Length: 161
Image 1 (cartoon, helix red, strand yellow):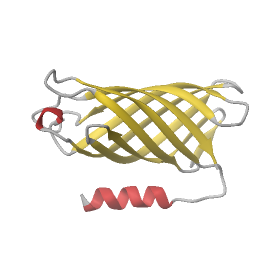
Image 2 (image 1 turned 135 degrees about the vertical axis):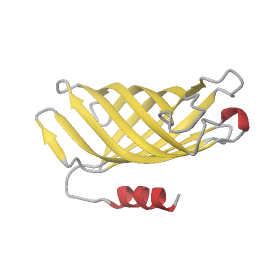
Image 3 (image 1 turned 90 degrees about the horizontal axis):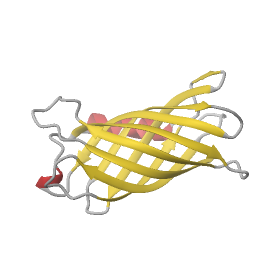
Image 4 (image 1 turned 180 degrees about the vertical axis):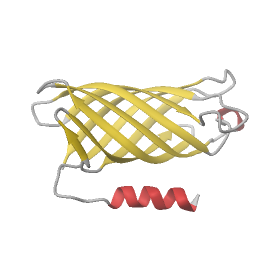
């Protein structure tokens, strides 16, 4: 747990002269286990300036906190990328290993260690902010005997600073 907190702290402390982004979002989580409580969620992410840029593709470190309204919580950090299709449209993706705390035994995903993957499609607004819709999946990648997973959908706003 201390190792995970150190990684997340490092990701949130990265600062360079290039554009960084805050992402806020809201959505819905659909647990694979039929006894689990499907629920609304809110998301806050920080995306550091990209360390790799190649044409229309950029890749950087990111950290995320996802709070489900019933009390479930995910905190993770990893890699996030954006592919700019053209001046207006983009595809986003990320893989963020992290810690998941279930609010009830029914929402248990099999372990505290979970990996959140995300794929999204979005548009650049006239203000420069970006609006996207994204699909997510959290799973322990079969590192535990139980691995029910949870899928989600989010509406996200990305704001550069």
